[in-house]
Image (tube, rainbow, N blue to C red; front, side, top):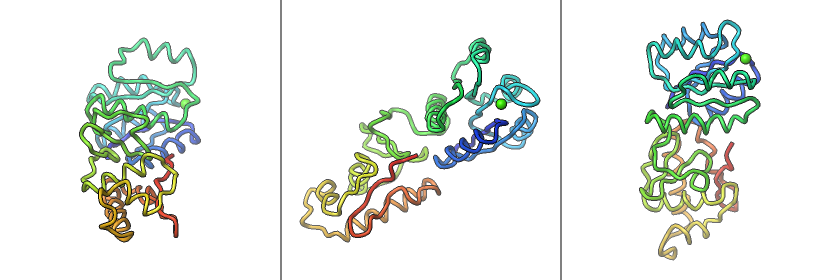
Length: 232
Ligand code: CA
């Protein structure tokens, strides 16, 4: 699980971001001041830093400079004003990025993933088409015929892979066991509803192994079938 150092002094923003990142299986260290952030960074290594520019004791840019003395940690800056954007652009951003407030937590998570992917440091592996091929934190790598979750490649059997793909096509939609059988088995007559249940159980266990927060990713609709959680 990638470790994120989040440095943000506005509690409401920090809370939403911590929640969004933890839901997506990041481990988050939250610091309110630049000094706290640098102390946390020296205590343990982090894979990523999200730095608010306006901090009580120094700027996010100062924090970045200090972090870079000892590591090449990728950084996403959070800015409140246009003037701050100018200052960020004055830096050699390299693999880093920035977002202007207000932003959606979802956007931040997507940016963090993208930067981690570019820097080859955790996150989902490359070669994945976003948008249509991702749902509820799952990513489908079409060419490799694999599904990634929380930065891990799921080790699925052929039927589990097909089942999960069907669910990913329409997050939130309930699929009956018959529909799932039709889509995922070439000869559905040979198997029973129980087979679907057993495979779902196994997929859930693999999701759970990849990320502890995966509990409700595949929902059971009693008497109806299964659906994939619509996501954040
Ligand atoms: Ca601030």
